[in-house]
Length: 109
Image 1 (cartoon, rainbow, N blue to C red):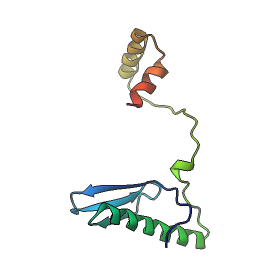
Image 2: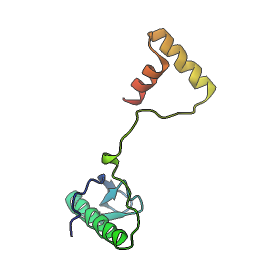
Image 3: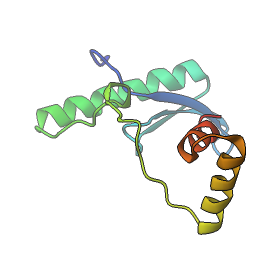
């Protein structure tokens, strides 16, 4: 059974330990599906998620919100060492930009 309006985030990667492809769903980090091809791994994890969602709905459990559907403010706080903070402040001043702009630029690379 396919999940209607499936907006969850999927990824397929190679598992050296299992010598197979593994399908993963970001919103359900405890789930995975092993298969011989990437296409089969994706199909498998999507079926597992659909089954889990159905079970959760039948038990009136809240479903995780799809990351793609969440709204983000663009703000978050990062804690760092004072030496790193100083170094970034110096780089920003030398570049003639704000610390925020410099840090945002570095994070987006």
